[in-house]
Length: 413
Image (cartoon, rainbow, N blue to C red):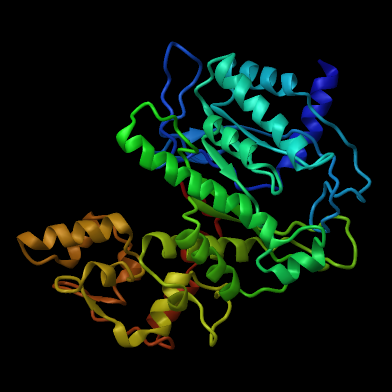
């Protein structure tokens, strides 16, 4: 047991650098009195949409790796303690942790030892043993190893709820400089295959109900922020294309954590966590608020504002479209008002069918009126200027409450 605990310490610590750890979107129900249920789960160590906190066993199969990526603590040239689990050890850990109510699922990644197929085959065996031998119906997230065979990826998709292929760096130029043994073609090949297979299984399931599930929670990826010189326009354009073309469930962003490395990496005193937070907020606007990348960042403003969140920054840079009359404006325009969220905007559109929405109604809807009042007109709303140099808006931007809210990391399901 001491040997297993030592491995767990090393490989759980190494797994913390991979933030693409989520369990949202799966519909794998428990059948035949098996273990667990993956239906409706959310992000590891965060909250689902219904407010529940979910935890996953998050480990590497091994931190041995044949690659020498400068950003990675597990690179082959790094002098660190190495360890590797056997297939049976990971299976036993998952079942034992689940029975003790420590976890609701497994997030399993790995360094690459020997070659891609050798590593991927072991990841698949773990998922297969959990499903078929132990009848485990909890959530399983596996890394899809670039270079692995199509047969192994297909098998992985049948047993895992989610697969992820990490792009890591936002441009191929940076990848060649920092991780010269990798390339975008090898990364996109499994991503394309998983997308096409998922669509094929989905289409078959419409006519053949017995068709097995294939990655029901979709696929995700991770981008490292601050390890390479790309600006926020490049990062968000890449994320937007991944959502539209690859149909990814999530793009995760990880602030580069300085580790003992070589001259290929920037010398950072602290990880760029505020930038990571701003990019997560911008990503949220892309996916749920009907913003385009150009609305958020562009050639004139290639990077996000650190002082204020992207939605408020957009409003202040586009003063000509405000104030918005919430009783006549389209839903998409109401979404762009700082202080109004998706549910609040829907409530406004629904409520105004029965009469004008007043400012007092907005407070009852949970809208942050201290922010919204500068960007809306409605009966009862105070007259306020949205001139960026006005005392009201300057006070809004500099308020301690807003700064505290903006500084918090936001993780979404």
